Image 1 (cartoon, rainbow, N blue to C red):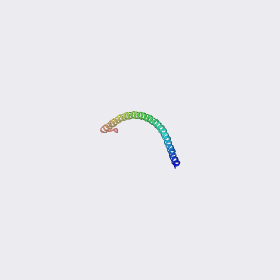
Image 2 (cartoon, one colour; image 1 turned 30 degrees about the vertical axis):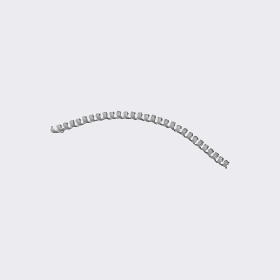
Image 3 (spheres, helix red, strand yellow; image 1 turned 90 degrees about the vertical axis):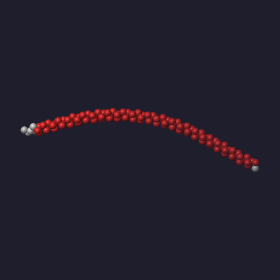
Image 4 (cartoon, rainbow, N blue to C red; image 1 turned 180 degrees about the vertical axis):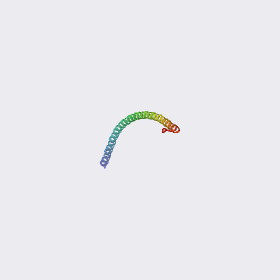
Amino acid sequence: MNKFNIGVIFAIAIQFGTFVWFLSSQNSKIETLYKFYEAESAKEVITNQVKMKIDLENLIKEVQQIKKDLKQANSKDKKIMRQHEKLFELIEGGSQMMQQNETKGGIYN
């Protein structure tokens, strides 16, 4: 019976040692993968930050271009408004001349 107990204890000890070895190898693999993903994640964060900075610079340029376009549009609007004012003045002046001609007998006399 003593031999049986020693054999059982030896088998359990071997299984325990195998279990400890398996867990340590799994832990090593997990640590390696964690370090790899941590490094990849840091690279990805840096890449995203660079892309965001480039996007921000492009956005700032686009906003500046929009501001220029708005200034030009406002300038053109003012120019058009002055032209309309002159046209209305000419139209009013022409209608006043026609009224004067009508009161004097018109162009047919």
